[in-house]
Length: 427
Image 1: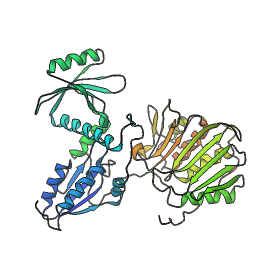
Image 2 (image 1 turned 180 degrees about the vertical axis):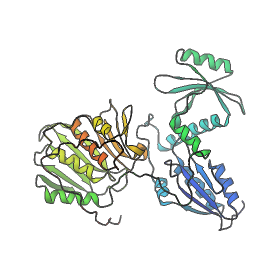
Image 3 (image 1 turned 90 degrees about the horizontal axis):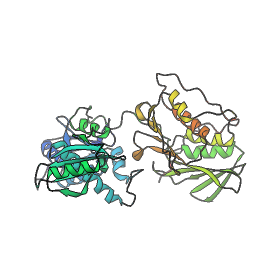
Image 4 (image 1 turned 60 degrees about the horizontal axis):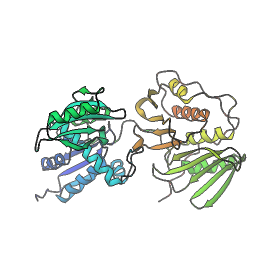
């Protein structure tokens, strides 16, 4: 193997305009050799010193780590931005993956197969003749033009697109069977590109602004709780609000029980990572009755949202707040089917109408699978409570050009105001 001198340097960072895309910046006398290796790993040039990795399976951090390790073995100096390193160290999962029986490695392999199909179509190695919608997702029929000529049916979009189990000997046979399966829905040529496919294509061709070595983080970040803020809020809750009684059955857990004995909040002191559940809140129909609904809030959830939820449960206002959609409309959030997104997609609110455990979800960031924090409400949660929480979320962001939403009626009692965060404890 050729050995690269130590003055060949490769810097990896998250793309500023597309998360979790990755930008590689190469410098030094052997930068061309580094770029050749990066090209083999899926990176594409966007400038004299920059390359981008953008994939439809959202596995850029994983493949960046593999590329970085290979470059180290060849002798290159590698630097990985801390935000990207956190993504590499996080073994995330799709929140609503349709094949729950798959292991993480199997999920990654499904995504890799979908990526290969995407690349073959983009490069012209797989020609799509027809497409249709089967009522659930996009299906298509196409032919490979290189190697052993094959004619296949495809099923799914983005990271879920796969070949079906049957390969056809001729193009005519594949098309005839496609017409038989989807007689009414068939349309000529490939389906319109998904939003993700469009973004990936733009990134790889340099249409979107490329990052430089001076830009290593997304331009707009969602509001996130600082280390120690949750602990400080919990301490103030018991000090200032006598209607909450404290229990600590375990060193890592504190329970706040309301004097009504129908509301309970549990706090996990060990929750640190953005996917760790820090708070679990539940309401019951009577002190020893059935649970009406519950909510989970992860470690980065801004304290004002926690305070709003507990404040409502302590003393619900007499005046109804209405539906959360009305609040978000007034705040100029963008609706799309069952999803409302704040300007810049810094916070997103979505509903899953037929779900039980996660009927409503509020999260920070543009992607639920990599959200900075997440609040999940089960079926049964009062719409008034949702409206108060979403109104509080809208209030965390800079005011849009449209008028601010009408303030919601406040509960009779007030929970503790924000307390300055204490220094984070060492892990």
